[in-house]
Image 1 (cartoon, rainbow, N blue to C red):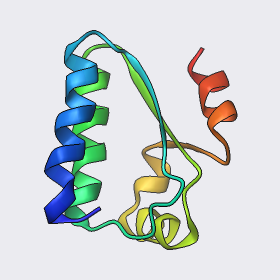
Image 2: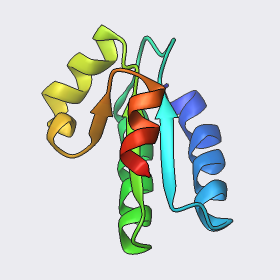
Image 3: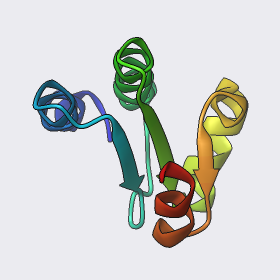
Length: 92
């Protein structure tokens, strides 16, 4: 997820939030790269959900993506789970 793809993903996530979704579990299986533009998408979604009393959970981060989240300090900001099922369970 880089500057080329981040806007499309941002639009999709924000459309879910704007349509009333308040709990999102986002599965990052297969995502091998994330840039600062990609991180910004998740931060924007988290802030939007927080202001709407909602929550976001991320799951199945690949090792390269987990490292970026760790270096950026996002590990302490987001609820991160190994599996989609764990993320969904936490959001209930």
